[in-house]
Length: 476
Image (cartoon, rainbow, N blue to C red; front, side, top):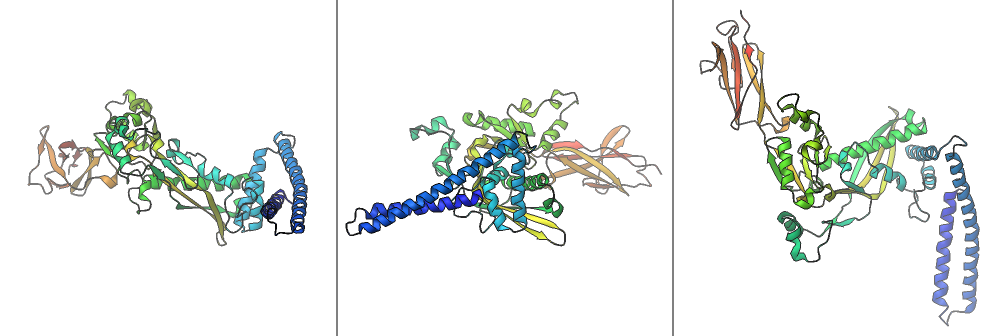
């Protein structure tokens, strides 16, 4: 008999003993119940207790033997460490899930020390992920989602939390300790933030050679893949710019956080920091894309500028966390945002016999809440033209504007073009004598009058003008 089975039997006996004890307590005071029945029930209770004590001793001896064995293994006398034993047990569970062996999956719960005796569903039915493994996969920090460096992640069922991290005895003093936006938000919303139960499903594929292979490789492949997939799902939700009504509250970009505009990414961040209330600014951090920071550096004058070697937080003044999905930098106190998962998670598996791949599917339930949107600001860079480039094709030159934003946000209107040519050392505006002189594409005469002449384009957007590189038409 395994330790796990002993735990179950002891839990069953304890329940029966309690039922007898409750019956005796109720009937002993009833004069209509014969004493013989009460004595019989008492004898039955004592017999159950004696059986329980025998099993408990066997359980304690077996548990001590296992602890001693682990201690011996951990001491290095057998060359097997406690970590290796744990890896072996994890691998046994993952293989049991892969092969649909519910009995084997059930027995590994005890080895992993995850499910207490007497639980309603000890691994039967769906492949419930043992609590210890669920904690490691879901709540253990990992680098793939850098937002976890500044946000708390928990695993609590039915979680509710107050919006503010402190309480105020006199509600009339609210405006004295919080800015107007915070006071208004608290007054118009519920005092408690309730975390919902939204399904998150992630999938990974594992080759059959890994499933049949070494324990360490199997555990690393599955847990690393599930964590990475879960991280990506978290990022996509936290930085989503479109979502359905059930999920839009999870995104920093869709809950109505105030935007502050600047001429550059650092200017916008500094203005956003200045716009925060003191109680949020004291613990403020910035989450932004690394690409935006390096693009800002490239706009600085002079490669010897000391900012090129400075850390972002040394320039901005608060910690900076890079996240590739933060297309608009988020500035604020990230103690007011949290990811919570329900303790129960389900791990299922299926095999594609044609490819030999096992598909592991993790289903978890949780929620991402921005508890107080006034604790954050969006640092929005005013879109501007920062450069231009001209390219040559047959009988034509085309100009393209370079903006300080990604392709999805580039303006499609309001851009003015004016072509120029170099005449006696002076750039001279073209007229309607040239087709496309005020458009993106200029028509030129490669083999005739324009041979040997240099052209460039003046691009204007929002009262800012830039010039493209010069294109010289080859001589005939």
